[in-house]
Length: 278
Image 1 (tube, rainbow, N blue to C red):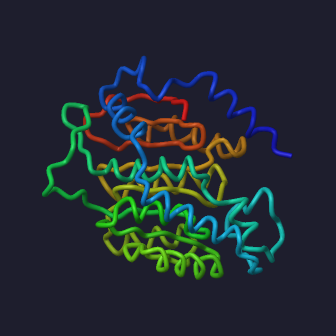
Image 2: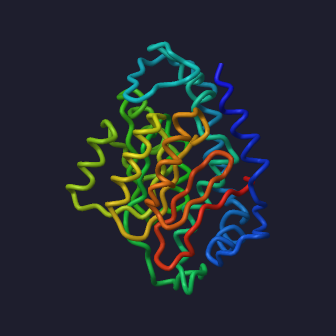
């Protein structure tokens, strides 16, 4: 039994700050909390994401799983039912909503260390990158939140990549492309193709050293960007990887939510580590 996770979550809740922004001295982070984090989620996105989740919960197909990282802490069998994967590994609704709002926050830019809405003619450059597609539930949230952007998602398991591709097509996300590759190989391909990254969601492998390595590689693939690491408190090893990233000051500012670790590569941002209660 993994006891680290619940105790780490309790500790975070005890030391974190309100999402209302009280006591936050960085103008950018204050505006980010009040303008993006606390904003209302798009009902259309939520409806599609939850419809897909329900479909996967009801899917009794058995598939052969190829684990290229640490694998699931709950399921070790090579043959797994789709519904069991969805229950154990899909991003919960609360975090899926937050992820969509964070992507929509790319429609803002920094002025004097504060968020301001982009002019209607301005488009943020760079792809949205996801490492760890699984069934495509979080991918759908990313793609629907930024339909004008290209989403590249990477899944190492062929069976999951095939299901995710079908799911994204069925739910109207033509801007999403699934790469069936190992993460490091995919990152090298994206870099060699000259792609720039403006937003990345790391949700796979679940090894601390791998998390730190992926974050370093992605950071070299763009200038201004946001990188989000999922499940940073899943294990002691994962949180150690996250702390390594923060200690190295890979990004000028970092934020911890109950589940996510967020890196802000934003010019002019006030440096610091922020812990918020969401």
